[in-house]
Amino acid sequence: MVLVLDDVQWAAPDVVGVLRHLLDRPLPLPEPVPLLGVLLVQAGPPLPPGLSGLVGDTGRVPVQLRLDLGPLDDEDALDLLAGRLGLPRGAPALPALIDLVRDTAGNPGRLVQVAERAGPGPPPPGGLAVVGVPPVIEAGVADRLALLSPPARRVVAVAAVVGPSFLASDVAVAADLDVDGVVDGLEEATAARLLDVGEAVDGGWSFASAAEHLVVAGRVSPARRALVESRLGR
Image (cartoon, rainbow, N blue to C red; front, top):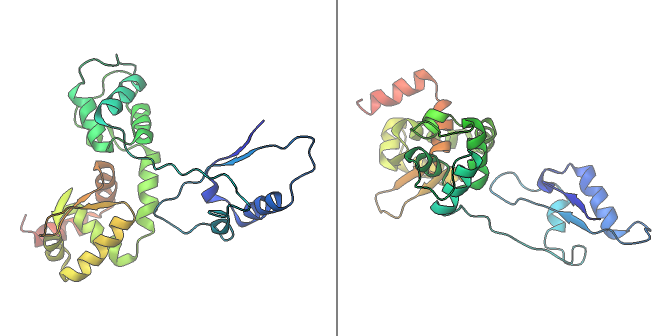
């Protein structure tokens, strides 16, 4: 038997206290029971008090394995999505599937959520803009957005109106802010994995995926959108 604790990063302080107690004073069982804790470390709030001390403490936790979870390549992502939709695997990919893989950046968890939302069979073309962002994905993006400072949230909201890819200078004009302040906000959002920054010297940025862009853009009020578009001369 193995005792598995998932999503340990959300553990309440009293739960962390029980874990520390069990690690320091194991129960007198006839046979040891392995304890497996799954901890997701990502941009966001700090680990609960006491938990950060356990991470990296090889005295209390002698076996630790870190897995860096990246996106699937296009072939594996298409295969996963097709299987979830009940479509033949290995067949030539439908353009609609390619759209969804692009819009989820090949994230396997997101692909599963998108397949559940789309339902069995071929999805309509147009990606997440047509299928819609699943609630679980929207909530995850919203959580990261809520962690930003108010100035950074404003900058990201304006950027979403500008487009999925944009220049810092364009956001500065649209937000009526100086470029330095805009870059500060964009860098904060990048640390929260809402944005990616390009290698171009002109300050090119983009949303991490269509999901981030759609969620943020969907939270911009009509008044704010109209103001931004008027500043951009649209």
